[in-house]
Length: 248
Length: 248
Image (cartoon, rainbow over all chains, first blue to last red; front, side, top):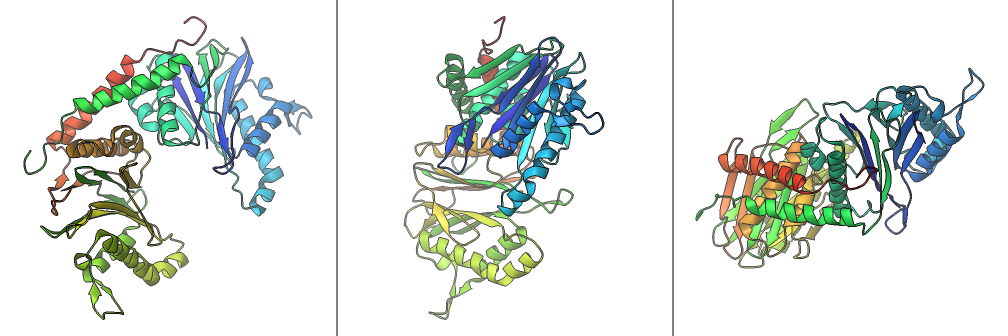
């Protein structure tokens, strides 16, 4: 399983991803799912993956090697793209490339071609954007109405984001919300686990302000989990009991 | 869609169910999903349903009419059962009966035989028990280690229950948690909606202490939603921002 969220606020982009993978319940490992492509001053891009690990890794490797461009005879690479839109289309093309290679074999093995991505960043002084890319290579873009996107095990952590994130949320408050959302998910689904990878790209900085791994036992995140639990208990206790019933 | 939860604590049983049904996104209706069978002093049973409405309604009607018992030549009914275990087995038999009637036709129409139930109560001075019954007629029982069960859209509302419910939770605090869990679910999934039906059966009372419908705009529930939102905002604000990053 996997949980990744991307949050796009006025001040910038936050991406948070877990690192747990499992092939069945009895084969659990740690793999990085948040990949950062950066050339400070020119571009910063974060690509978070969910779904079948062999597919997502093949997509990442394909992007790293570049895709053949039959028109130019050259290789198209993420770092050669002149806009986030073109870079997102290139990720979609890489997904379809991998599908053409392995889709049929996976179908024969009764394995679904299951993969999805969050892809955010800024290129060449263009707009800071965040996309979700599907297994068909198509994609949607995050807008200020709902300034976050999620892939993987998204439900447990969605109420936290629904309530706390607006487009005007401070960048590090957005990171805090992403971490709380991740905490809720990890508590309810053992398939999502530490360590966590975090990327922050401040709008128009064209570089990663933060590219950080939150390890198990890291003091701030440990404290966040404890405080959030305590605050929820207090919130719960502060609400009166229902007045319904015969003797109430 | 549907969300129902059942909570079994030391003092008794709480069941909460929404009433929204949808056939596609463009056909939304209100149907009762929490059915109460009661003969005060002898038994009280609550049966909450999720899944295909035609299937769950057929199961309820079958239980109301009784199932043929080839050995006795009589009709087996819920109210004739001498224990919760037997009553739960009877619900399972009713599910299989309905499957034999409609399963093949549904398969031909490419409709999954999708139904599940929460079934709780107390019969004849026996133990107060809570079960989850699957489409195959099999079932699991709620125990004090994890004193709640959910059917339908269960993920959004699970973190709240995970954090707040233990076997020693007060009966009306458990109801409060169930209502908060329902609130979280309704915020994230439009397929779950008001009004809500609530059943409380105090242990060894052998009758419903509360059999209540929470209508939209009902003052306590409205207040609970407002307070919970405000408390979550306050909880969120009380946690310091992450200290990560170059300048922090």
